[in-house]
Image (cartoon, rainbow, N blue to C red):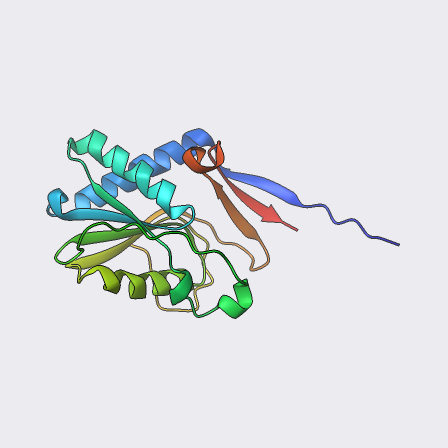
Length: 182
């Protein structure tokens, strides 16, 4: 006998709410950055990269200043590859020195903090930034490391077995944030 378990998907942010959240995050980054000409957004693959692109575009719209952007693959800096399984690394794309820059690491969801720890280690390969800040679309709690984002789009208390799924139009063809409950 097979027991069927229904998966429940709850929309946390609609496309319009996601757009407003990105706009608010961009405004907060601008307010906290002393010199926008030194600002660099580094998206953490996978969904941090298109999110960083959206933020860079919005900051440029707000301030009229193009924002340097890069993409960071942290695969070889992770300490939990045995738990998450093998994956094909993406290509890190940081074509400039980060020394003296204000770097904002961008990721879609922060959970245990291990991705951010790995990203901090990886960033050191590209220079010594003046400051590193963290922007996330969703903070779902359950941290295992003492890492706290500087900019948060949505605080979302979750159960450990729940999944937060971010969909970004420039990556997935649609905008939404969903909570998946089994």
